[in-house]
Structure formats: structure tokens, C-alpha cells
Amino acid sequence: MTGFDVRRYPLCGAPEAMPARPRRPHRLTHEAWALASRRFVRNDIPPILDRLEGCTRVLDIGGGTGVVVRRIAEALGGCTTVEPDAASASAIGEGRAGHRICVLRGKAERLPIEEDTFDAVVSTWVLHYVDDVVRAVEEMIRVCDKRGSRIVIVQGAPDNEMIGLLNRNCCAVAGDAADHQGYLLATAAEVLFGRGFRSIEMARVSVELRCEEADLEERIASAAEVLQRFWYDRHPAAELMKRRLAGELRAHFTRKPSAIGNDGVLLVARR
Image (cartoon, rainbow, N blue to C red; front, top):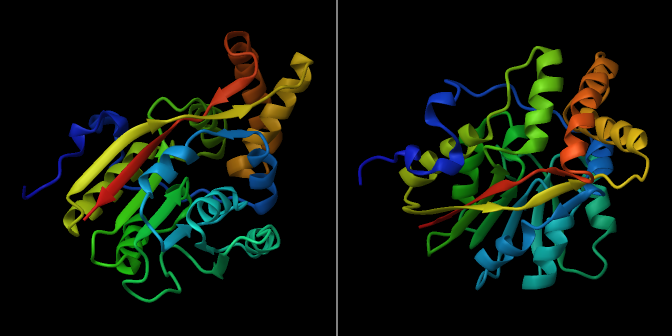
């Protein structure tokens, strides 16, 4: 094959809907991520671990709260993570609990790691926060060894309910372009294919944001707070975003009383 046609992969979304260029990256604070992470049911982690079978040197990009890092370390005996935020890096280090976890400060576009170091690189829900997606994927490739290494990426599914709520009620208020997670997946796949990762798999994975307050009004208010802060923490139009979210969440919770879908797409690329 001389090219890579992302239209073969419906999980990237409709190609005609993809933007011509990336939108500006989202900004996420440690506090907002910690607030949301307590509510996530991460059914995407077991499939990630399945794809890492046989790996012994794994790098995680953007450690966040350390949930994925710890699960990898438990399963494989250790994990290295690169995290740009000082508070998040510190929290991961404090939560090691005897696991062999190495925490490095750095950005996805400039990994503080030598070439050919890892046999697998994992990036879960990170690409929409980086300044340069192509450069970030190239860095993942650079630090992978050249002997059958693999790269595992998770981003949002085309019908992701949480991202839809944020696009309609937060991005719209902020005047930002809508987030298109399939664009990120397609860009990553094209870069990987072009650099010799000719085996590319995409599969749907399940994640939910659980909202279990007994009182409906409290549930709506809590969910609106979590969602608004997730991408727009401390935004001057925060209250307007929350009011708009609350209106849509009221209808959502009549259909799904305690959960907002945050399903993802698991991309696995092998040399």
C-alpha cells in the first residue's frame, strides 16, 4: 500500500465532517481532572492491558491522575509516565504504593527520553490537549524500539455523549470550533502508517461518567459542574455554560438516569 485511507475506519467518524485543520487544544487543570476522574467507569483499561501482553517496557503519555499508569504497573511490573502538570506528576508519585512507576516531567511533543527505549507507548485521552498532534505521535514513534513495538491510543468515539454535550454547550459559548476526536485518530493513524506501523486496529471501548446523586436537581447541577470545568475550568462564561448544560442534562437523565457515555476508540498500531 502506498497510502492510508481513514475512510476505511468508521470509528473515525464521517470523513466529510472532519475539519480541514486542528482546533486549538483544550486546557485541563489538575483540579478539574481530579473532580471528573472520580466519576469515570474506565472499562477501556482492560482492553489496553490486553494489547500490551508481552510488553515489558511501557511508556504512558500524560499520566493524569495515574489510574492507567498504576494499572499498567500492576499488570506488567512497572511503567514510566511523562506528565506536564506539576500537581498531577506529584500526585502520581505519591500514589505509587510500591509499584515500579517512574514519573517524568515533560510534554508529549518533546519527550525527555532517548530513542528506541520502549516496546510500547500508551496515550489515553491525551491528543486533544497537545499543541501539535503530528509532533506528539512522531515522538511516540521515536521512543519506541524498532523490533515489533506497538503504540496504543484512546480518543473519543464519534457518538461520544460527553463530548457532544461539551461541543454544544461549552465550545459554542466560548466561540471555539467543535471538537472532532476522529480527526485526531485519523491524523495519528496517517502518521503511524507513514512511519512503518502498517498493522492498525481500531475498536470501540466503553467509558461512562457516573452521576448518582439521588435528587435529580442535584444530579443535574453536579454533572453540569463536572462537565463545564473539564474543558473550561475558570472560564469567564462558566455560569452560562453550566445553565446550558443543565437544560440538556435534564432531558438526558430522563433517558439515562445515572450515566453520561464517554465511549472511546482504541487504536493499536504495530510495526
